[in-house]
Amino acid sequence: MATVKKLSAREVASAGVGKHGDGGGLWLVVRKNGSRAWVFRYSRLERERMMGLGPLDRVSLADARSLAGDARRLLAKGKDPINERRAKKSRAPTFREAATAFIAAHEVAWRNPKHRQQWRNTLNTYAAPVIGDLPVDEVRTPDVLRVLEPIWRTKVETASRLRGRIEKVLDWAAAQGFCSRENPARWRGHLDALLPAPSKVKRVKHHAAMDWRELPDFVVKLRDQSGIAARALEFAIMTAVRSGEVRGATWAEIDLDASTWTVPGDRMKTEREHRVPLSKEAAGLLRDLPRFDGSGHVFPSPRTGRPLSDSALTKVLRDAGFDVTAHGFRSSFRDWCAERTNFPREVAEAALAHTLSNKTEAAYFRGDLFDKRRQLMKAWSEYCTTPPAAGDVVPIGEAR
Image 1: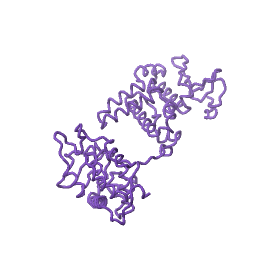
Image 2: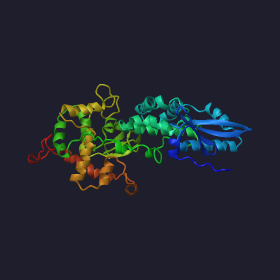
Image 3: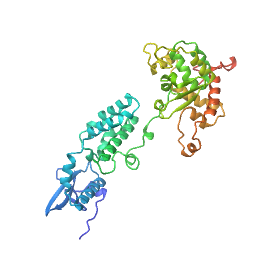
Image 4: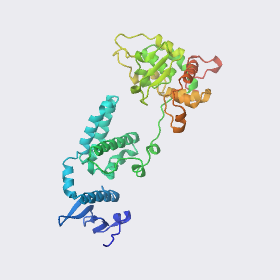
């Protein structure tokens, strides 16, 4: 039997009108109207059959070879590839249906309604118009690219999360038996060769932060403000905890006798429990707070009894004339640690509930360095709440 020369990627792209064989029954058919499509040619029960594998703009050479290989394996088992595909198509859901089923199966484990809504919104807005009606076993790499490329450089975070969500939906479909090939939305070893890494595209926008040298004077002014929002912001500064975790704090999480606040994992960005050592100043602030009847929240909204909104803390800053964010005080804390103290970096990172990116380094610090963090937070609170000496005052807004 004569050996058919395999097609190269260049030959596929430049092939003229006609049929071009790749071997094993796989052919590229180029028609006079310019259309290019893959077909698998085979014989079954002494009858020649041609099975379309899809157009070239959606099915790459590698994908076509993979599909032809699947068809040959079916023939080896005595099955007809076309009949099997027809039967499978009657079972395979569309991408839209698979996405709905995936969300229904997993949303109970997602932490909040906002996360569930984000899943639905991104898939409905960007994926559904392009691949929503495609059976999941027909979604190819070019289809995924048609979803991602329009927003990959302009909405980097959204596009990156969307890719991951498409990958998970297709993984679900594969686990259900609707897909048998590798996931066309996977990043490593696949899309990373076709798209720039999000970190290379994304313009990092840091949260506006106050210079750490301005903190003592600012805290003095903050303590002159009344209201639960001002106290929440002060507590966030002294604990260096994310504002959302402060706003959602409950009295059940606070142990004033042990001067410890334990934030449960389901409220943490890292999804791991975080113990916060409370300095004398932070614990004193809590003891002075009123306990609102019927509310277990430490910082409830006076009007609703629900946790304060993020805008409430922002309003405190804006009313005081500062164009910084509550989250930015974590950066102020980190800069102070690096520039003004001798505490090891890993202690400061643990105080911020950051995960060490260096796996070797992380292996040596499996604990939460709680005792060392208590010393660090004691020093930080004392620094923030000690008014600067008259000669050391840094005028707010002029330090930079």
